[in-house]
Each structure stands twice: as structure tokens, then as C-alpha cells.
Length: 229
Image 1 (tube, helix red, strand yellow):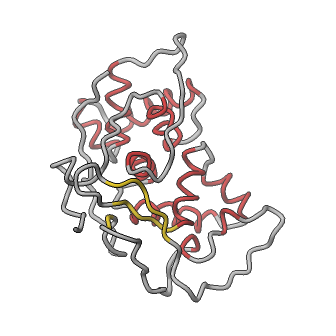
Image 2: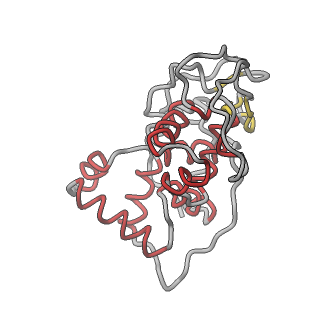
């Protein structure tokens, strides 16, 4: 099934630096005020291990994705940010992550937003899409139930959601209100047992219903210039 035209890379890159680097990951200096995920990755700790609450004195470790098929540029992200995106792609809500990591809900919410910003994404579900296409998260295998088929309208809304569009922007494209879009997306998630929008994006990629093109500007001419050579 051919994916609908998308709006890749519409969000502005994070101020933390370019999300694409042409060689080994660049080390960013430690900054005061970064959310907790950039410090000691509290989301990978064991549940019974209390968080120290101390800020790290070293830069966050970077993880690299697959190279662009044209220019070879790779996507880079902090290990803690990637771990957090993986959790939301698995269907863990912010409240569930909050309970498991013993972080406050406000902190988890800020960390999710910062993880998205580090990839130049508009929101966490958009970041999951970029991470999957950039080789930071693996593609799974999934078959949608034939008893719960997705209509063309459903697929259009989901693809626009994965591209980082807001409910209002999706409504403008599909001639619906933002509330109708939210209701429709929630209905789809509930019907298929997807607990987060990030999980919906991961499941749709696993079912090969979303575009898997590498997010580098060399491949997608609609994205802003973020790769360096």
C-alpha cells in the first residue's frame, strides 16, 4: 500500500544541535536544566533502585542510527532519550513510565517533549516515526486483524499523525474538527489495543503501512537541511 504524501521534518531542529552528524557522535557539553533523561537515564533503572537525583558531570552518551543511503549521515540521540521513546513505542503511557521510574509525571512529560525535540520532531509519536526510519529503533513484524480493518480515512489520519501534525492540522487536511480527529484517533487506538500514539506508529510500521524512507534530507527533499557532510 502506497503511503500518502507526508510532511517529514516539518518541526524545527532542536537547539541542542543537529540531529544528523556525518561521523562519530558529537559530544555535547553538559548543561544545567536538562531534563533527567539526559543525565543518568532513570528509565533504564531497576524499579527497586532509587534514583540518586544527582546531575551527571559528563555529557550524555549518544546512540547512532543507520546511515543515509545517499550521503551516509547518521541520526544521533541521547541513550536516555532513545530508551524513553522505546517505552512509549511499546505502549507505556507517561503515567506508567512515571510509576516504573519513580519520576514525577511532570518530569516524564518534559522528558518526552525533550526526546522529541532532540530529533527535531513535533511530538513523541513523530519522534518514534523518525527513530524507526533512522534505524534507532528496530522494525517489528505485525499483522493487523482482518476483523478490525483500517479504512482509508483511518490510515490518512494515522499517517498525518505520524508525520507530526496536530489534531487541528489533520482536521484542516481532512475537513474535520480537531475534536473529531481526537475522537477518531482514540477510537482507532482502543479498537486495536494500542495504548499510546507512539505504539500506534510502531505497530503501523511493523505492518508496513507507513513510509520507511530514511529521514535524511538527501532522501526527502521536503525536510529542512539538517545533515552535515
